[in-house]
Structures are given as structure tokens and as C-alpha cells.
Length: 502
Image (cartoon, rainbow, N blue to C red):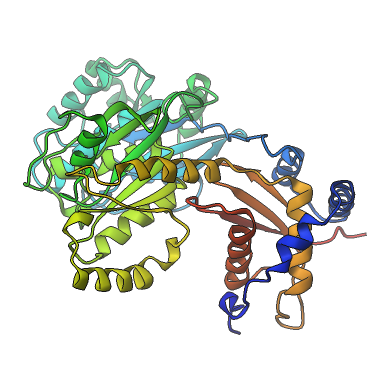
């Protein structure tokens, strides 16, 4: 069965008018009635938490606390991925006898005794690695930087190697809990092998068998006892200058933009792609207010095959986006929009950050290239047509003043909250005009909706059945047409619930 085709329905210009004509008291009463109707359905504890947070105050911004982060590091083939799978209770990480199977830094949501946390699996750490191994090493260093606790995994049956000792020197500089995990201790006969690891000087080794689960529960009890309730490294900063990440492929003009915004030469600018390695934080006054700009290293294609320094730069770029509130994706208008550009935009969307598109080198654009560019934008950037566009020249500073209003619009949208009553009135009017198609003799209904959080605006729909992806896109499109949301992704989550059995 084909999806609901959102594009078949033209915007109903009267929807906004009808919503504006509704009495606030009536809207709230209707919403309360719909909420009480949910009591007839099987609801989970998470549902009730979302519903409790549902409010009528548009200024009520909800921040989900950042979960504490536990990083698992160690040299190749010591059983890190097996330990990840054991902690998660399911097979997620790739496990092979070949060293170095895990190359990317991968995050998972884990839980132990009712406490959720983020678990980060890393590639094997080699101190003198070249090429791909250097990339893996840099990645593990980033994971340590961005964690609240570290599980350092060693193969107890092999014993401490020179690589392990190198890792220990790195970990001794870390001001956070570090647990020495002696893996592959499958039974009592191998316990002495774990004891020998005292020599590493990281305290008492914790003997475990990731393969069989032996000792893992005790390890998690110890870790959770010292883990903060809210991450110290991933927590949301509230207040202070708004944080802007400047991202784009190499040599697109990110450093030039930062220098022009700052009014001085603060970042090395070179025609050689990849001059910038680490993000550089700068507080800059622009448009009458202070911003914190982050100039990031250019993202290169095929990240997993890069040399260590470039891989490290890409990781730092991803981290900068995660720590920012809004990202300016710079595009070079003198060149065609590439797959690389689209991947960078997708990175921002996946991170849930506000988005502004900066079309750089506009002063070098001729009429012929302009015609091609408009076609490329229409074809390749249709999925982010809601993002503010700014045509600038980072080199000359042309139209740089237009960047501030674009950033402000994107951030205002990112912070926007729709009161629960108004959101349900919107859903009721919309579904009355365009009901969901019947599927298999059944028509899914939206029972109730609420905005669970902002940054980005995240909505939860309680439904009687699965909504077509096309119908969800239709709801998102109409939300933008009525409420704006210029410059921010919109997250629409569904919770399909059945009636309680009598």
C-alpha cells in the first residue's frame, strides 16, 4: 500500500484562521477531555512522564538531563564489543576474532538497575599506530575526553602489554573514575591472571568474562555507584552566549568567516585544505550581541579511511556540532553541491541542532553558475527548505550582517513550544480535514498529542495505529506552515497504544 502523499494536499489557508478563532478556554477543555480519554489505554511509565510534563505555558522549556557517559577503551581484540553486548543484554556491537573490527566510536543507550546511561564503544587503541590504527587511537582519546567514567579493558590471559602501559599513562591524567577490567577470566583458575594486573597501577583489577557474563553485574554496580546522575561532560549549557558551530567541507571558508566576524586574524587561513585541526572557540560580538563561535576542521569524505589527524579533526567537528545550539553549514557556491555537503547537513539534522545555510563566495558567482545553483538547491536541498539561507562572502564580509537575524530566527524556532491545548486543536482540525487513509480495513486515529521538549521541538503522538511516514511528513509540513519553525528540525514520535482489557 502506498504511503499517504503529503504533496497531493495543498495548504489549507483557512486552517490558521480557524485555529485563531478558537476560544482558549474551549481549547483547554477539549484537550483535557482527550487526555482523560487516554486513561482507557495501556500506558507505560514513560508515557505518564511525558503526559505529566505536558503544559500550557509556551515559555516552559523542558530539558532532558544528559545521561552520564561510560566509555569502553582498550587495545584491539581484548573483548570490548563483547562487553558492550553483555551490558546491553543484546547483540549490538560487531564481535569477531579479528583485531580491529570496531573502528567507529559508537554510542548506545544502556540501563542497569533502572538507571539509564550512555555506553560508548571504541576501536582498539594503539599508541604508535599509523593510518587506520591512528584513527582508532584518536577516536578512543576523544571518547575518554567526552566520558564521565572509563572502563579500560585488558585481556587477563595475555597480561599487560606495552600498549596497555601506554594507555595507562593517558588514563592517569584523567580526572574521572577509571575501572581496570580484566576480561576473559572465565573461571576461578584464571583469577590469578587478573591479580597480576595490579602492576599497571590503576588499582584493583575487576575480573570479568564478557563472553559468559561472569563478574559483569558487580562491575556495573561499582560504576553506577560513582557515576553522576547527569553527565558532567555532555550536559546542556543553559544561558550565556548562544553557541554556533561553523561546519562544511575543507577549504569552504570557515576560518575566513570566523576571522571576518571577529574583525581580526584569529584563525590560520590557508588555501591548503585541512589547515584547521581542532575547533577553536571564540566569543565574538556580532549584530549587537555576543556569540560563541566554533571554527571546525573541514569534514572529509570516507572518514574511516583517513589518517589519524584528519580522523581526529572529523571527530572534533562532530563533537562541536553536538556542543553547539545552531550550526552554520557553509557551501561554496562556485562548486556544485556535493554528496559531502549533504552528509554534513545530515550530521546537523541527526544531532537535532538548529540549521542555517551559508552560501559562501557569493561575490564570485556569475549568471550561468547562479542558474545551475538554483536548480541544485531545488533538487538537493528540498528536505531543508525550511532552513534560513544567507548569501555571503567570508573574504570581503559582504552581507555578513544578515547572518545574525538568520541565527536568531533558527534559535527562536529551536526554542519554540506549542501549548498542549493548541497542539491538540491543530491536530483535531487537521485530521478532520485530511483523515489518515484506511489501511487493512483500519484507520489509525490520533488520540492525543503533546510537545515533549524543545531544542529541537519534539512532539509525541498517542495513536491507535501506525501512521504512514507520508502522513507524518504532512503533519510536520503543516506545523511549519502554521507555527513557522524556520531553521529547526521537528521530531515527531509515535506511541501506538491499545485499549485496556476489561
